Length: 332
Image (cartoon, rainbow, N blue to C red; front, side):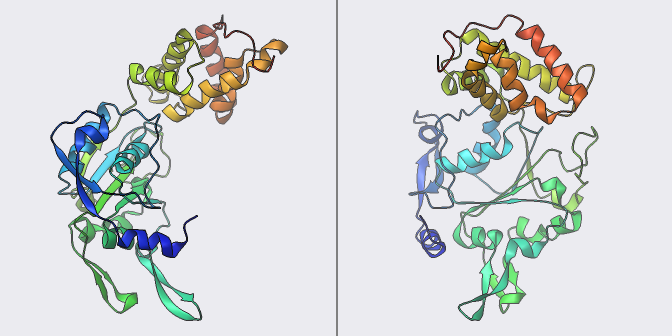
C-alpha cells in the first residue's frame, strides 16, 4: 500500500517517453508518436482490460498528441466521458488528479491550504498544484456545475500561465511541459436547454473560449455488443443484442427524442451491470420471475419514479416477453 510520501516520490521520479500511439491504443504500430510516461504511479488510473475505445476517442487522442489548449469534453450522462479520458491516460501512464466540481467549490480547494504537520504549519498542495508541478493530468469533472466566477479564476491557468500561491510565501509553480487540463460536463457550457441536468450553470464565455471542445456520445450498438460479449460471455448473443437495443431506446426517451421523456438512462456501465445481474439472478427463474426483468430493476429501474419504472417494465416486456433460454439456473 502506498503512503502519501511514497506516492509523491513516484511523481518526482516520472520519466517522459515517446510511445507509439497505435500500439498504445489498438495494439497495432502506427509510427505516430505520443508522449507519456515510462511507468505508472499511484495516481495513474488502472487499465480496464474490458474497455473498448470507439469513435469518440478520436478527438481526445489527437489532443493528447498536441495539447496546445485545455480540453473540454461534453455529452449526455452515462456516455463515458470521464472513463474515456482516464483510460487514455492509463495507457499513457499519466497520473490523473480528478476533482468533482460543485457550486461551492473554490479555487483554493484546487490549489492547496496550510495545515499542521508534526507540530508546525506546512503547505498542503492541492490536486491542481500537484498536476502542474509534476506533469499530471488535472481532470475537473462536472465543470458546468462550477460557479462561473470560480471557473473564471482558472483563466490564467488555462492560458498556460504559472500558478502563484500567496499563502505559501508567493510560491510560483511553472506548468510542467507534460501538464494537461481536461474538463468534462453534460452541457457545452452554455447552460442546459433540455432541463435534464439540474444545477448546471451557464459558464463564463472568456473561460469557455480557452478550451478545445469535444463531444462524446454513446458507443454504437455494435461496440456495446462487443463489450457485453467480453463482460458477460455466458449470455446468449440474441439476448445481448436485445439488451443493447433496449438501452438505446431508453436513451432516446431520456434525450426526449421520442414520446414521453424520462429521467433515467443507461450508461455503458449500467448496461454491463444489467447483463451481469441477469446471470447472477438466474435462480429467481424457479420462482416464476424473469431474471432479465428482475435484474433491470436493480441495475436501473429502481432509480426511476413509479411512472417511469412502470413504463420501463412495459417497454422491456415487448423486448423480453419470451426470454432467451439461458440453460440450467445458476446454483441448481
